[in-house]
Image (cartoon, rainbow, N blue to C red; front, side, top):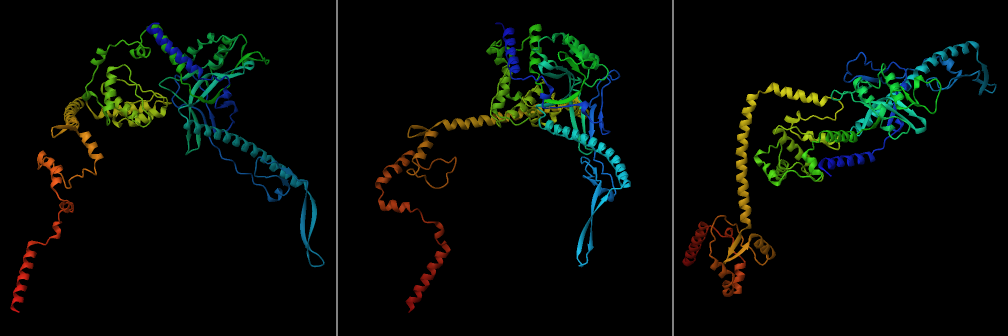
Length: 590
């Protein structure tokens, strides 16, 4: 198997693994969430916009597709207190059923012959006049109920979208919102999924209590997706015959919310897909065997497509057509084209490594290995400085004038890495996973600001000064390293005692083991001062001295010298002697 075949086999393996781990949904209601736009209440606070791409050259960034302002409920209608007594139900609750009483019981209290209070109940029949008044109030209330019910449905849609807004904010790396249309319906295959998709975004204006669903423009592409994966493996359909329509989607910028061209496109697709294909609006009689496509736009949330399979297919196609294979890929499949000698020629001096942050020997070693190898793997548990190392390497590569692509399993990791990069070069780092071009705009603004503040001549001068400073610092660092190495070397040298050599380590171990036996001489040790006794004298103290020393003398020595602070001063001692002599002279007279 040749080099090309090995690399293609590797990519095919990765593609199959990716396919096996992905479950293709055939029904849009199996996705995390969906809402059909034809279910939207017709309320003044809801704005639904369709695209008119015939008169619109491009899709404007942040085009509104749907906007909902949460409405407030209307206050209940006022009614006379007297009329309330002739109805049942809660007048203020629009969901409550109101009924008219035909009669009512009136209780009055009178004083009887015994002078006691007594309740008397009377039945009163409703009059036609009161009944007519209530009917008029009910007519007004029915209009109020319709408005309240419409407001309630609108608020319900708003609340639903708000929940999805929170969900998307929590899972931006794994979930995405799309608008879809052209729903293919195959009853006997349990298929109901749209073919035309477009990524959208949702925003919430807390101040005005407004939720907006916006179109997105990614890097100048409108990112319409002609999606037919859910039809793979379906018998009696000509899926290959529809693939040419993907080009048409991009050329005509067909949007799921396009009012003008979408219907004809759906007809063309379904007729190419199958002889049983029909556009729902053209059907006069229901047909259970038909393959139907519906013009029914909806918004839904799904797990993000990683695009691995499609990307691999494009890579394989390029390898087959052009045959160019990067050396890194060749090494992955076991083909090494660079000799050890050529690798060593790629050596780089430590002073040529331009890190932007604090570094250690391991990071310098990684940079050196990258210069000598096509690929370098650095492994380590969390918190060991991998992100810090990448940030340092980015500064080094940028200083060499290179373009760098950083990939990660999660977008969060890329954000953490960008925060680690020094602020003065953060403007050179652009995320290509954002939903809009905001990161690109900030980068352009940062570069423009710096370009207006500096000129090339001043920058060249600064570079030369910094180069000289860097060389001086590295020279000083080199000297310090040499001194450290010298100290380390001295520690490994042997101590010569009585013609016998012993290492510092062994001496330390011996002293530690016999610490109690070999009590150290008390007092401070002066550095760079020669020993006051010779080796012979030291040997005498260790052996002969103990033989001639009496036990009482040894005990006296062990008591130590008297503390000088216990002695009186010479002047005081002289005074005491004089007093003593004076006293003796006086005693002699007596």
